Image: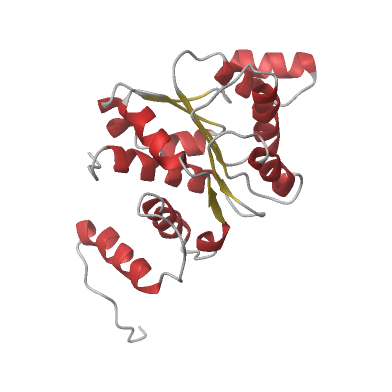
Length: 215
């Protein structure tokens, strides 16, 4: 076996050491103290420092999201993968919850009947939720576009939209549309993103609300 020097680290220390490495290697940036933990969480999740360049925040995005989490908001994701990644245990301490409608049989049935995507129908379900909503889109640009249409129609007013769909078709355009809506958002501009990034942003906000507590 090749002699490779590995760092010795207990499981509880791995994240701390990772964050220390990220902080040491972080490129120069203009992020605020509120925004930086979100950026670092995305880098930690992806091992990709491009998010230092790609993440775009509205001025009050983090503040409003943290207030909403503390007030017991609902986090809506566009994939089960993102839903699985959100720290629901901490979120529920504030009286909040996370939901994803993509696998609901009635959503699939309605999408088939209307000839639209399940992602689009899921956004309509999200718009019907009472109370504060944080929307986290990490996969489908159709979800982000439909959410923007609903906002434009005055039918949906999320506290924050996390725009992080990934891919090559309508991904860049959907994020640019989000940035034109006048709502608060955190967007991973360009082609990169994904369910893991959407969940990472959610968790960074949840941990900020909880003072860093993870359990």
